[in-house]
Image 1 (cartoon, rainbow, N blue to C red):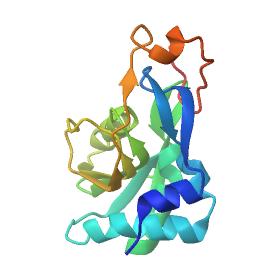
Image 2 (cartoon, helix red, strand yellow):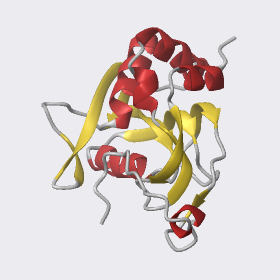
Image 3 (tube, rainbow, N blue to C red):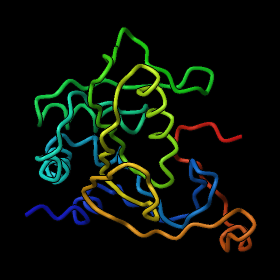
Length: 187
């Protein structure tokens, strides 16, 4: 049996500090899945937990939003034998490029490293729907959501990590410097 939390600690993917999340909220902990994903064998183990949960889900293609969803899409695609592609931001707008296509009626599984608010997944879902695809779910290594994601969510592990607005943040009040480890531009 795969112990996902042990692997996150072993790969230093679970960080402690003061972080600005892509949602704009602050947190004292951050999951940096890139630390996990640098190890193919450990990624394969963790993502196999997700793939087991997907065994009864009918989907045609896996789409991962850049950056966090790309390697997850690849590995889920590899383990399930499905095509894996990705969306990326152009001028801060999620787009499907590089000759990738989604055919009308294709059933699409969105992949992420971490789902908190679902913002990147929702942006990707809009791209998929605009091309005639049907979103059947979201798969992620980490589920940090509060349970309000509108699509079925299949994750390797659920982590409840406290977050705050900048105004509520106790770490800001203590004067601790903030890090922004994610890739999204926050306005």
